[in-house]
Amino acid sequence: MSGTINKRPYGENGIIDFSRLWELMERKGYNKQWLKNNGIHSNTVAKLTKNENVTCEVLANLCNLLNCQPWEIMEYKRKTNAQK
Image 1 (cartoon, rainbow, N blue to C red):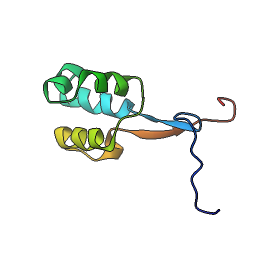
Image 2 (spheres, rainbow, N blue to C red):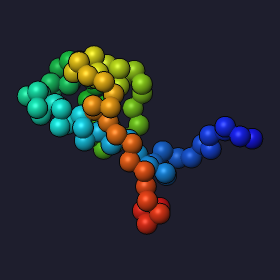
Image 3 (cartoon, rainbow, N blue to C red):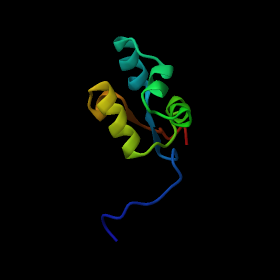
Image 4 (tube, rainbow, N blue to C red):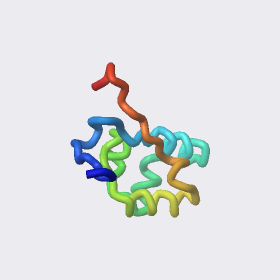
């Protein structure tokens, strides 16, 4: 069946890296506590720190808080064959 996405466990082929989020926040003078004070749950902040799954709603909230676009806070990093 063409066009079908093969469901695999998160991180098997690559991850969403949130390094850009932390860099943007540092440039703006914000920290993790600022996120928590502005409605991002501490469990979600922990997930972002570990590059774990978060919802699109979280991404939209972050973009709203930081007045940015998704590409400014995250990036897809494909696993190489050596990492698999």
